[in-house]
Image (cartoon, rainbow, N blue to C red; front, side, top):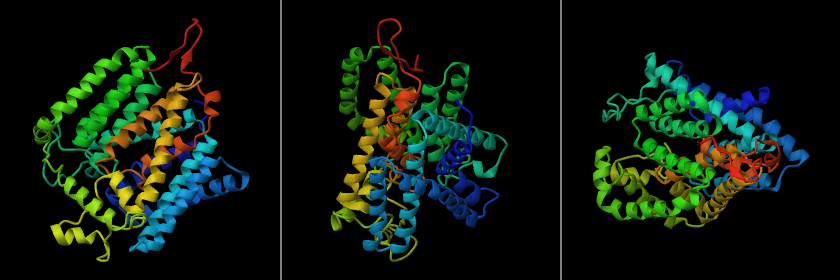
Length: 418
């Protein structure tokens, strides 16, 4: 990788913050000073703003303008939100997050951005394991149900804000390292990521890891030209899974300490549909349903069930209820376009493995968003990756390391999965 610049370090800090570094340091650790959390994020926004304004004045791609337009829609939802102050604050926050992703897409190649993301992920995962090993109290997750991990230990959250994020984003780290590096270094870091996933005690993380492994397997088969021979067996396995899963669903959940409602998630999803039916077109405004105020529409759930949920525990339903059909349709276009553009970049004749890493990470995170609220979430890495994939420039095809080798008179995908 070329010489690390000040902007690279800024990107790495921003990514680490989006993984939960600030939330852990300033809200959970012995250094906890909640006021510093807002100051830290405000500093990142302030550093991003002049970079974004410079691009606006000098000109940027139409895709970047489209993202700014979508951000404007989220801010505009303040008008019809029943929690206008909360909607305004949070929509500005995610607009600045999207602005940061635009700046990265305009200034960095896919390879450079991917390397910075991998660096931040590795630092967070390895330091999390270290803080737990030395006994830092904030590194251990306090499970009110006292559920041990699959290894029989207490769950770890490390420098993340929750054990689920520690496990899920350790899976993202595994993806980037499995594809982007090789040799002994890859073996060591991937092993550390697998250990982190197990020590998180998160069922969601285990499912994410399973999805990631399947996607990595498909990339490996494609790289060796075996993909067409694997389509039949893989389709058979998928169909068998769909046939067997309904009868095995509850026993599988019980094995992981879950019930048929997925710890109450399905009940919240029913509530999400109820809220959607009330305001189907524009929704309730970005982050306009749940809040501490008794005026929050979501407080109705607490009155009915005695439980005050922070969200619907589904990224897709959260986006649908908050932004309506209009906003959700726009976001799905962004998500699908991001996936499509990264896929095209990763299989183009002069594509690169870093685009494939970003693609697999987004696919894995998008798959678990059905039961986890990380889609279109302010100050979270998932939104940053999606927007970068949507906005990244095709110049990467010219400047990044080729994935194809034609030196022997044939073309094959060069992958780290060997």
